[in-house]
Amino acid sequence: MEAAAIGHALPDGTYPIDDKEDLKKALESFGRARVPHITKRHIIKQANMLASLGLLPKGWVGHGFDPARHMRGPDGKFISQGGAKTASAIDVAEQLRGRVHGS
Image 1 (spheres, rainbow, N blue to C red):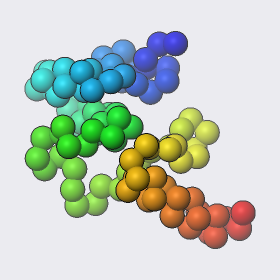
Image 2: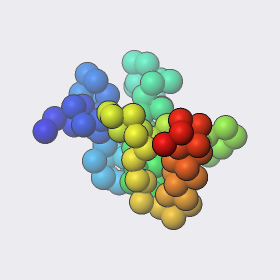
Image 3: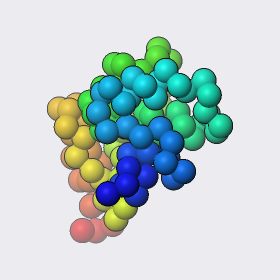
Image 4: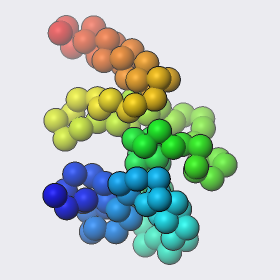
């Protein structure tokens, strides 16, 4: 399956990130991004999926970043992130979502 089709790359196929080595390469080439804010969001999302937010430059993740808000699958449901803290945030978000929508 093509990386872009499953969300591991930008829609045009650039910045494919399937593992930590790909993440490091994406960070190294970020300065050449055509649309920096979209590329940055993609890199952060993939770093979170790989439980590797610590590899991101200082200041990329911080105030207002909520992995549970950003990590949804194509069906709109929250995706498991792997890390204990992130999984807890997703569990809480799912519970709150159920209360709001009555499920």
